[in-house]
Length: 145
Image 1 (cartoon, rainbow, N blue to C red):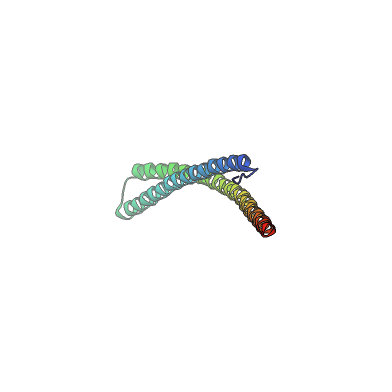
Image 2: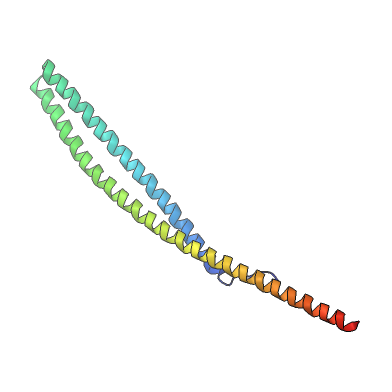
């Protein structure tokens, strides 16, 4: 007779749940990285524009060009604020998914530990039965002499 873990089906369901949460966590990481990269690019773009405006002011330029650049800086600043908000939301979602994953992983470890303990108990019981059977056989052999 082989070992049958009574909670095997439950363990399989929990493992599927853990795998699903792990995939969601990876997706959340990817989304966060994408949004954070977009934010970085916007900040870099704004910095370059501000540097260009600073150079134009020192070398002299038209008021119209300065106004255009200022409008562009204001537009970039608004985009940056929006992207910072998106980044924060993505970070929060990623943290929540990470906590979910940790919870599911701990749950899986508990089931794995229970299975391991039950398997050890099963092996010990089988060993005990074998010893009893061998003792019984040796007593029978001794009695036949």
